[in-house]
Length: 46
Figure 1 (cartoon, rainbow, N blue to C red):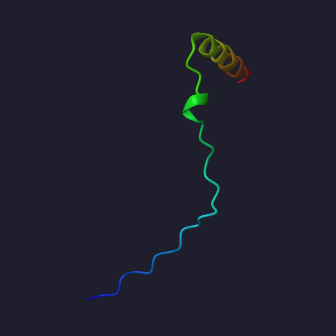
Figure 2 (tube, one colour; figure 1 turned 90 degrees about the vertical axis):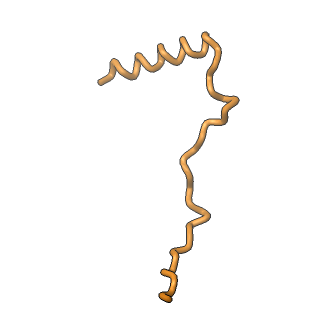
């Protein structure tokens, strides 16, 4: 039987991408409308 390949140690201090908490995601119509307006402004820049 062959030896198991040595596994590289995982970096536990690696910065993970920031995740938006569920409670902070916009769900009301007002927030969605506002977000669409902001998004539209970014699209116009290109």
